[in-house]
Image (tube, rainbow, N blue to C red):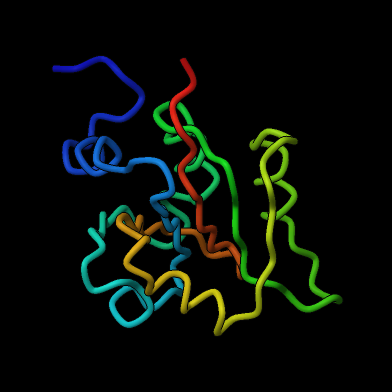
Length: 139
């Protein structure tokens, strides 16, 4: 038995296959995983029940395995209190570029062949989808 923060074998393999510029989508429980992702993307189902496993927890764990150069989020309405956005920003380096795009643009990016991994979470908060662009490994 391996002794790491992630022991899910399919997720470990998928993370190992994510090279520089690959995109990883952590999607909330409301996301349409099959219709709004690349048909070639590998989907890892971690959405056991609403609220488990949350997007923030998943992000925290995968940050131990990859470097991130960019985070793309779906833009939320100005009056919406996007608490998860603040949590993501607190977890990611200040040097990481954050981009906010409208809904259909986000779906187009998620459907791109650059998105090779989709992690289905049980996150119930709205606008919790985050598309990560993998950075090179620092030597």
